[in-house]
Length: 316
Length: 106
Image 1 (spheres, rainbow over the protein chains, first blue to last red):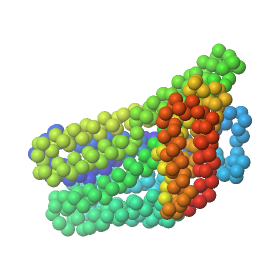
Image 2: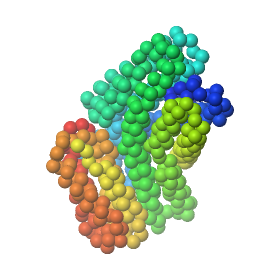
Image 3: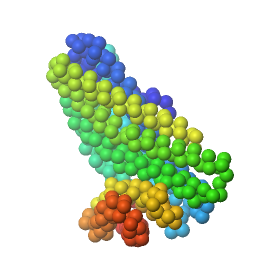
Image 4: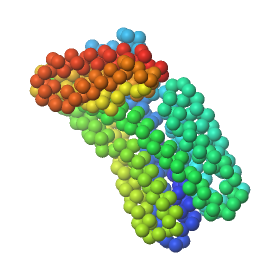
């Protein structure tokens, strides 16, 4: 997966448009850093969601590799569907969250254009695109909440509020005032969306990944101990290598929790808004820089873990 | 209404850790691994499951999970009374399977 997603820059760009001149290169560097980290994190989180069902299928097949008394089937002996063809997590629910994440990034991108040099006509057109995207997404989440994803209902309020912000005639007022208002009104729904995203990541991604990696270690350990007398030196070497790999995967997964990075993103966002609201006080710039740096470090750790996990997985 | 999935995660991790604990015989380790796998299967299903408010079975399952989770916190005791530990975990595995039948959203 390529890291091509553009960042969410709502508060940042307001601050940039209003105060960048007074704070100079420090602030610009923070912008660039925040932008880069947001792109990276968005891509990493997207990959976690996208791989949820595939991960369950891999675990199901590994369980059968380890235990020759277990059969492979699309339904188990009780008639329950297995992860071989059944997807435990509704693909449309996962896709909805991925699209929401992308939409938040797109929203930031359009506000960036508004804060920058985009012509009023182009900016208005772009904001209409954002509003259309949010409207479609709102319908998707509404539908999800009525079928197999009740948690989707929580997103509806903030998404509607964000839609209202985007739909307001921002360009009818003085540009800076319009952006300021968008920052103020957009902050609450964006924070709510990021909070729900954090909770979803903890609930779906972290619980399944953390227990899944531990299960993989346990299965290989159990296989080794059960068959220790039957395995040749070369086979033992091979199995021990699998144990080492799965143990490393477990350690990596524990180190890098995607929900923690979303918390860091939300805190950075708050620091940006605070900086914007404070008329660019040096003290608030320092707070902002600390938040951006912490977010950068968390994002880096997450991405390094994702890359290392993918590398280890290919060895399996 | 939801099951206490955080407590369930702790139980799964404890079962899997016991399956790799050499203070237990190989047969007991096998049993703990099997129970850990069953509990994780339940977790995957319960993450998306929703139950009616005040469903007695969910409340009972949560109490059971809490009680077993507490027991598994003390690994020495869990090992010292391994037969009882396995019986109690087997019971919650069965109950969680049954519980899914009451889910209004799966």
